[in-house]
Length: 406
Image (cartoon, rainbow, N blue to C red; front, side, top):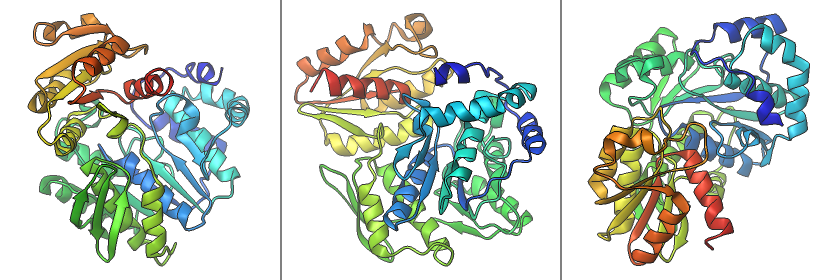
């Protein structure tokens, strides 16, 4: 019912003008101390690691991330509890007339509900992940205690720009006057753009250092990010190590504002399990699901799974949304797999067989993803099976393994 109500808000254009007017008319002000995170990839993982670290420090923390995999409630979490349906319904009823008057988009309504809920929860800290961009993003209506930009690569080019420099400028729109900004591992041209915006806002720019002494085992990575040694994450993706390092550097910047100890950092990283990110759903055979849905994310996924496969063949089962860069995604997969099966799943945005028509001579299409997975498991019990292309597809497949393929 809640999702049906939200689906009424159908505006698709990417601009913040309507939302800004709505915020002004309602007199809304976002109250909690908050960290604001933008970036093409890594912003969700960084947000989760920060959330877990500050939870380990005993704080009451709110987390807003997008998109959700199964239910909208996943987007809004306070102290490990998702926002209840009745709270969403209450905010929808209270502001419905204003939402429709200002013709808000679905994401703007979701963002506003999250911010209202966080205000009412009396948080110590909120971790806010941007949606698509930065400057025009619905989340960009408050002044944080720290802005973070994790990565920059080509995605959403129709809305954000056709070069990484233009996208960097759009992401840099979250930088506020005299508020420090932390960046992840950026190309020099993109870093220069963000440095220029930080200078314009008189904001201190901090770059994330590289970690050292990385060690991969069957459960995740062990690494050092000075001065913290013997850190561990329960994730097999190397890119998650980088995201964890950005989160650690953020806590360093905020030590005077929100102090945390080395043991709390270590425990927070260890406590966080990132779903749908190099997520092992079976070890015999080794089946991994991953929600990477843009070219840069897929490249990082492929690099990570090669480290795990250790020379074993990799068989990929792939499904994605219609608006994603299919050619780029399949190109990256081709580097690590000679056996890619296309499929679809039950979602209004999912590509179906006709949407793959340019690629059907090169890749087999199997309508039933369940059948495709079972076939690969039966045929290649000693190899590695990667299921990827979409966060939503990863969610559906994980449920399948939980229910039917245990």
